[in-house]
Image (cartoon, rainbow, N blue to C red; front, side, top):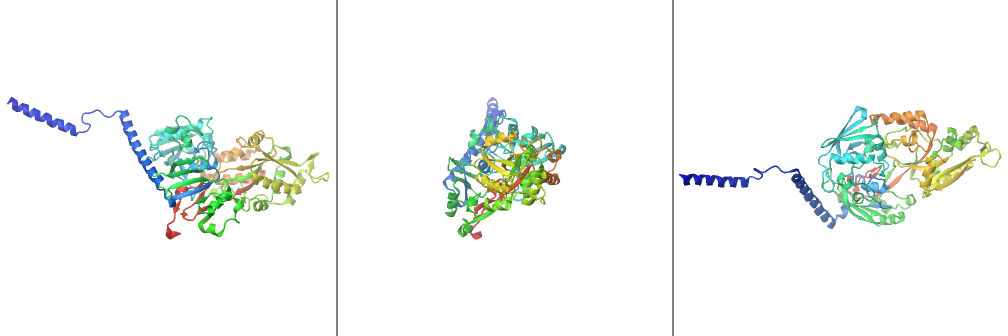
Length: 562
């Protein structure tokens, strides 16, 4: 019996060993946090290798029909839109490589979800809650986290970082950012701000694991960007081109265009030659010198022309503290001596429109009924007479209290079109008895004159957005209020506009503001440029926006549609 029981026990032990061998993890302790992290890291590494293998395939066999070649006048020094960046650095990186919490629909201009799938507002617009998508990965394989959102917004509080122009608008109103869950963040504002969501469209979300050591123009992440967007960096050939490739693991709809090639061509004449040779697919901005005389029927056959008026405008800034022009009637007379139609024809070659107010009309704000003070030299002279500026000594220049009506206009160096424009204005002013001196000035010195209010007039350009907060230049406490606009009614109106909890409430306020500016005339609005782009006809769904084209929306036409 003893041997019998021994055989049974031995069989049970052998069977148990087989069962334990087939049961993975049975009897073993749970994995440690380090082991779980290593397993996650190995999964991410495998994903990166998949992307690299896909990259090699694309690099070896690029589809020419799915490649979009864009001509740019220069290449940027870096590709981090969070920092101070050039126009083309922003257009190449933002909305292609980097994305924001909130996006804007290219066709309607309305706000749509971006990296945040939804959001809510509390306490009349002082608190926002954003819920982050859980299917987004950085282009190196790591998942997007709420820590990246908190990190991005926290960088705004570091003053030594030279941030882009749109970043300061968010920092001005930001009070606190909190992580409330694995996919939720709460943003607390100092005061309700109707422009907050609009400003978030220009805020690129940065990867905290790339910039945790610091952020600058020479950072590795600024020169080799890693974003969440539909395109990723493939190659950067200095002084030649930047190539972006399609992000095959993009969380949204995968773009149809496989590659974006931004080719540097400094000469507008050479750019047009490349267009004639069909070596380019897209020319973002046609030089006024070449339009319309150089746009032949052959070019029109292969390329479609797109006209777009961006939210930028040029203007003459008046120093309202200057005794000579402190009276609004003088500024009105100056405005009525500007022949805008003549300037548009001679200087801009009809590639500009008159700017009638601060707000960009397609954005839906502002008073569409307001027009600039008309060109009327006779009425302008009467206004100058009323103020007491008359030609008493018969030398052709008006005088008052033994002082000549002499206007000095500053303008930034390197702007030949502005100089040509001001020469026409100088001639028109001289006929009315006003002596004008045009002084091209280096921007550093010009900026100093503006900040110290040591100027009478200056020609400037405002690089705007579809929905603009003009408190920096029109509010008495605005940082760019160089013209010393001090009007209690304008201050109250701008403050109320900022504190609205809904953007829809801004329309009536914007109309009132433009009427006040039209009467008070702290600046004279001049022109908005008209940009003409050439896009090859094999591409469809081409929609110009305020920040260029959304290349991820482009489609390629089939042979049947040609």
